[in-house]
Amino acid sequence: MKRLVESSGVEVAFREVDVVTTGTFGAMCSSGAIINVGHSDPPIKIEKAWINDVPICHPGAAVDLYIGATSMSERQRLEYGGGHVIEDLVSGKEVELKATAYGTDCYPRTQVKTRLTKDDLNQFYLLNFRNCYQRYNCAVNGSDETIYTYMGKLLPRLRNATFSGAGELNPLMNDPDYETIGIGTRIFLGGSQGYVISEGTQHDPQNSFGTIMVRGDAKQMSPEFLRGASFTGYGNTLYVGLGIPIPILNEGLAKKVAIRDEKIFTNVVDYSVPRKDRPKLAQVSYKELKSGAITVNDRKIKVSSLSSLKTARKIAGTLKSWIANGEFFLTSPVERLPVDSVFKSMRQTEGTPFVVSVMQKPVTCYADEDIRAIAERIVTRSVNHIIVVDEDEKLGGIVTSWDITRAMAEGKTALADIMTRRVVTAKPDEPLDAASRRMAQHNISALPVIDAKRKVLGIVTAEDVSKLLGR
Amino acid sequence: MVKILIKLSEELVAKPTTAEIILEHKVPINIITAHVTSKGGDYLVDIPDESLETVVTAFRKKGAMVTLPKLIEIDKDKCFNCGACVSICPVEAITVAEDKSVNFDQEKCVGSTCSACVEACPARAIKSVKQNNHELENNTH
Ligand code: SF4
Ligand code: SF4
Image (tube, rainbow over all chains, first blue to last red; front, side, top):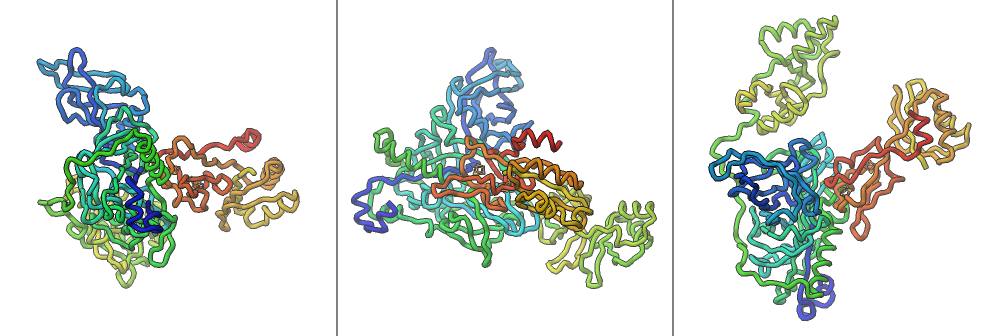
């Protein structure tokens, strides 16, 4: 279709093509499944439940459960989660359900343990509250350390980039004004047929970040299009295969579905900055992203897709053949999706603490000082960390009371021999949570606070952080 | 070809150890990666299957440690062709084909000296596996 519009024009394409099929297959964290496990004898009103060790929500009456895709196994943590439970059930595997309850006169049972397959479930519906993001950020890491995010493993100093989404194949990209996609639209979902039931949470159509909420009978689905996944150092998720047929109702739609990857842009975002609004380093098109390399500040960076374009194409192809064979009928929506909703940030009634709010005046020394003098300073100022600075007050290193004690025991006198030169630091305008996390990761108890020129402004200690954050 | 990992001591790094073995035994040794300083280092090298014993013995005779690095394998049934591993690979051993399938070239991969892609795979389809060469395994451990 896209080629036909380019070669013969919108009019011809509109006359010749009835339906365009789309597809996407990617990590969709806001997914899950509603199951009803039936009543036991004596009956139980489930309070807490686990399937294969993964905590399962119990949002309803006695035996209705919701398997959230990102819920983590208590034993295997990141390696197995709700997404894997859904995949295992879909594949026909037996899973173990454990549940506990407080017991009532009508539901006296307090514990149950059993094994189930999808055939034992009364209902098993995929119910995803946010799927199919129209487009998404391209992620990079500008810091000096590898980071692990929901956008995958990001190598330091912009050594790689990742992106998500199918670009021109994405369903919502092809119907950006929601003329044909609405409540009740029948879709390809997880290898079977499902429906759009609403706009998705965080639906932000005006910024081309539209989303949809979908539902489908998981008993009919296939693990080829529904896969549990683990992002190292981040968490679990579910890869969902979703495709939508778009009937070409008018010339306008014929023009819209002709959208090409080179016309779909997204931002390259630095995920090493732990804030809601992260720095945007560049704009790139999906064409560049799919080519395997993008250019940021004249530098070529290798880029990986996190969603499968191969499976996305297969979904669009499968949907096409279903329609051609009369196995899938298009529906017109019973209600339109909103096109003007906005995605608000959280209203925060309490201020967020930053490093600057707990940082203390540093106790410093120079690299050529005698260890004895520093030991004295540790005692008189009653601190555990002394920051080593040069004559411009710039950071040179750090020594702890423990370093000094050991040096004295070993008979060392030169500070240069014992100070730590590779120092983990903090910035004054950094959220305290980020600094606290870095201390925990490096197993250290203080961070010198420095400015952009590495001038020492202060010190933040784990003790001060825990006083403020209460941990 | 077989990949072996050779560890050289400070003393061996100072001498043209590898060059000597190549000349003496007339075997091609292809250095894939090398991390060497004056204090010692290690090389990952590719050698033809038939020269394996000769090369291993020769390096050991000179006092080097020879081990068998693990290789990387991608389980095609588990892999869903996302491509998350592609940009992680420093030697372009993983590439995306025209039809968007993700392909892996074991010849290019430097195996357990890298392993960077293993944890990048959300499908946990990439595994570090022992090289299937019983002869050398017996010899090297
Ligand atoms: S182990 Fe390293 S070299 Fe081999 S494929 Fe993975 S990333 Fe590439
Ligand atoms: S990251 Fe894993 S699933 Fe994705 S292409 Fe690589 S091997 Fe396949």
